[in-house]
Image (cartoon, rainbow, N blue to C red):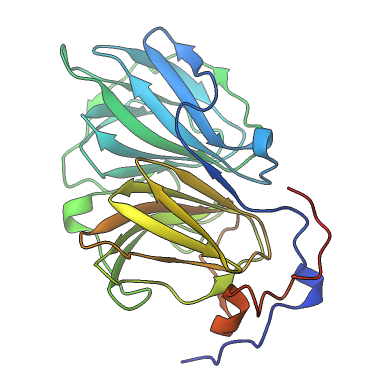
Length: 288
């Protein structure tokens, strides 16, 4: 059912933070294990709430041993290939495959390549996630390539066979995880492909959002402020900020988006709200 856009966001969702655009390598990388580093792009350091996202680099034949988190985690392969072990179930993942791991589920990751680095996009449902190392399982089982989930446990989305839908003109989206797909999960997210001139309507959320541009060049418009993004630059959109993405280039653009909420709910508003003149918060005194 089509719902008419709201004329503006309600005052109860007035944002208390500005958006931020975060390029890789702006902060020192965090070493997670020998040969494994994290480039954190969104999290507590830039006032995100309920979400951390970043890029994890695996040097050849490096291993991140079995551990748990008190929140859910999503991993999407950007380049190379990795094996994800979850309670001994081992999945080989290639570019743009995704796995989501619910809270307190023991998991590990490693690359078997002797030459190439693997790069992953990671998201966790906390601005300050914790990691606790645990013993590796005694039983191991290689999972078939067609395996996509274990009831009540992990969920795998294979890029080549994933269901797609249109979220706006000239777009093709994949849902990787949300409460309907993974009961009890705290966040939601997926992949979006934008053809030239593809765009989303002006909208806002009742939670923070992270958007990483993994291919091509995007224009992010936030209440009339325009940001050009590429090369895994990642936007933090705080709760209540009116924004949209558009592909103004002549080539495809793709993103990974993660919401700090369990359902992928966006609230569409009048397009004027995304302009300088119609900015619903233009009287704010918030400083960046």
